[in-house]
Image (cartoon, rainbow, N blue to C red; front, top):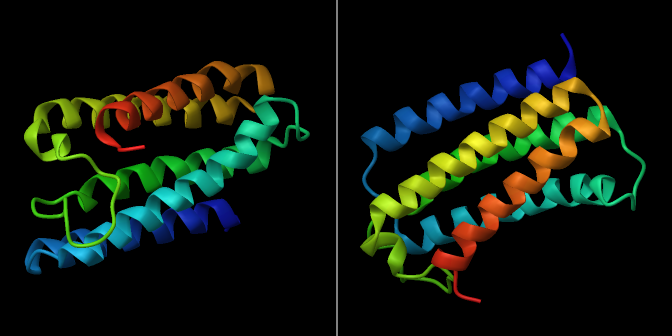
Amino acid sequence: MKKSVRFVAGTALALVFVTVATAQAPAPRPDRAIKYRQGVMGAQGWNMGPMAAMVKGERPYDKDVFLRNATRVEQLLAMSWEAFPPGTDTGAPTKAKPEIWKEPAKFKQYQDETMAAAAKLVAAARVGTLDAVKGPFGDLGKSCNICHDDFQSK
């Protein structure tokens, strides 16, 4: 079994476990939810960095690394949205603006748009060429930035 298939299968299993466990568990303490989302978003940035370097020509394009990182970002994005339950606007240092909880429909719209952009990036990465990923990578970056502009304090 290839490493990427095992990674995806393992991640999917973990997500199912976390979903079942969190559905039955009480709401997390605000400080834990804040730390969780910061960790997930840090991992997103960790995986976006090498892809950005490839798109900018600062690092040689490696289709396998790009696909791996794009897949991870898509999975991490799916995990990050659950880390904004009510009451997690305070409890630990956070850059999350109160608008996240005041404008849930807008926040959800941004989630949907960002997830769609991430899925397009993964599909483009499967093509295996730098030209195929440049546009979708830029689109995902724009989607992330729009959400950060509206919902993250600088």
